[in-house]
Length: 183
Image (cartoon, rainbow, N blue to C red; front, side):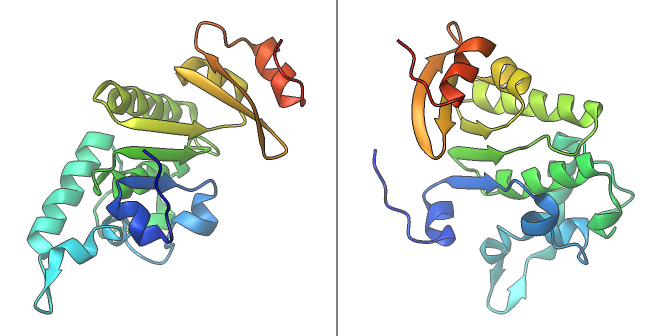
């Protein structure tokens, strides 16, 4: 189904969620707590008549921290004191709390340690197996080949081709990425 999206609010209403490439610049609110960062995308759903349903929000954030294995001393902890992997998982929790149908992950493992990468991969696989459409944008070829059912290769903003998992090899992807089409 083709949709036209005019703004981020409309995209969220349509079931899209985007984990941005640069969590520090465009994802995190560094001076805010873990909970405040996590609740950002759903806060309006828990506010009405001038009051915020704090208990319900806290329960949701605690549940997401457990599910995503976010390691933090407390939800009140300033998010910029967490490791890169835990910051990324908290941001991922923010968007999963919107119950998206399409999750777009732009460089989801950039700047995080091997253990956090494995947890992110596990979560992506779980979400996909549950029927969520996951679009992962990555410049790490082994990550792309290891995680994808299909690989769309771009070159200078143009789609060069789509490869199924069975035909996606490093050579074919690099051939397309250098601006050549598959024959």
